[in-house]
Length: 317
Ligand code: SER
Image (cartoon, rainbow, N blue to C red; front, side, top):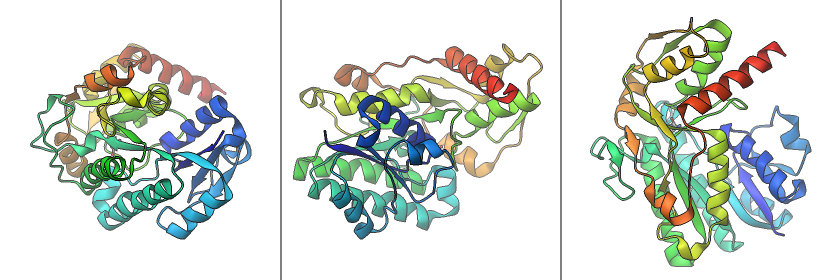
């Protein structure tokens, strides 16, 4: 089989995706890449690992020449909150990096997965049951690059018949690798703080509703979409997918079912609050469910109990 390339493999999603792909398709068949060296030595040692800066097209070409790549999961990106403090870097990485990877995919005839996000929506988007096809006028640099990314991936499919596919991910909850610089990161931090200190200070208002997903569902979504029968896909890129939606107050209530002493306080960060306020309360993901059988396994209760168990076990050693 042809190999699979993962960019951003040291990140929150990339690290777990790389392990899952290696388990499914064989360790040698998955080339993990990043500009950071992984502290998780398994990522580097269990299969091929390449230093790859997606901003350097020659670098991308060199990796494509060394390996025999048939599919690319392009996860290298700058998230929403960091993007607002470094818009130039966000544009470079999210647009030029994507363009370099799309060009490599075109030249080497690869399938490609591109993750868009709830950040691709904006204040004028319907907030409840946000449709698959709707108004997208985000006012963050992250959102601008995600909408443009969705469009350029659709364009490469139409113009060059490239097999591009993708989803709009909600906030991602996981315990293996920390998220970095996102607006939804509170939903990860809260668990570590709840288990360690039984309290958390949240930077979003208590009534801020956002879509979320537990990592095992996200990994399965990416693999299922890339394995789906292409003839069934009416959309290609940017499928809305979600598993649950909650506010910080609702998440705190759920955590209290396991840790009754848990306390939450709020110190709202205006930048991240404004970003979160511009995103959907919850999305309609029926297109993904109809076209390629998307279905989540973890809801709020199941995810919360698993997160608390795993983190508690790890702390106990
Ligand atoms: N989790 C991302 C962020 O908060 C959204 O896709 O930036």
